[in-house]
Amino acid sequence: MQHTATGIRSAYGIILLAVYLSISLLLVGLRPAHSQELQWLPFEKALATADSSNRPVLVDIWAPWCGWCRKLKKEVYPALAPEWSGQFVLTRVNRDDREAVHHYRGQKLSSLRLAQKLGARQVPSIVFLNARGKYLLHVTGFLDAKSLEPLLAYIATGAYHRQSFETFQKESGF
Image 1: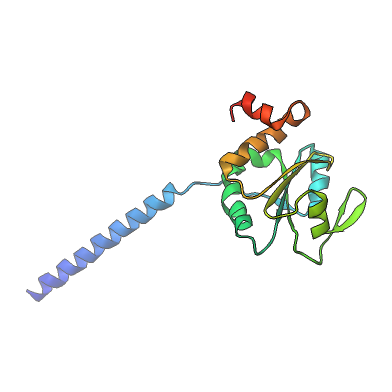
Image 2 (image 1 turned 45 degrees about the vertical axis):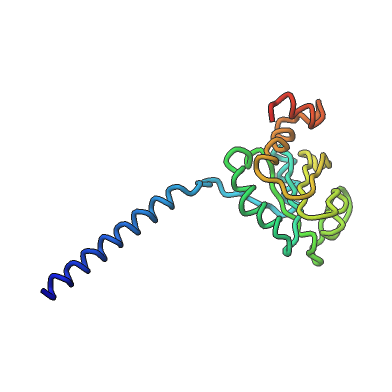
């Protein structure tokens, strides 16, 4: 009688383990796959790469204490990576880094001064530069993927040469 109870408990344990493993594998399969890893370059290298590849620059202005900055990096940018990462050269500037020195348009600037020069007075801020490093526009505050995507399309397609962002949104259906 005792062997039967032990056998039933063992079988029950094996079944529970199998169910647990099956559910775990199913949940892993449901996670969104971000097959394309984002490549963040140092600021000066990003400018040189943009110039040689004729792609605009997305500058993420952030600070270590900024929770919304972390959310942008961990959730929003990876969600947009499959479609948009090849369209831009990516760089991040920690505006609180007191030791970094950046060279931009003939000037040596601290991270904070660079952020200010690019119009980023608060974090998070996203700044867009053209392929030659010229300032195009910036947005301040957290944007989810759905809100950021029209801006990416506006810059990547070069629509900023021809029309306002508002007109672009109306005409493109964003």
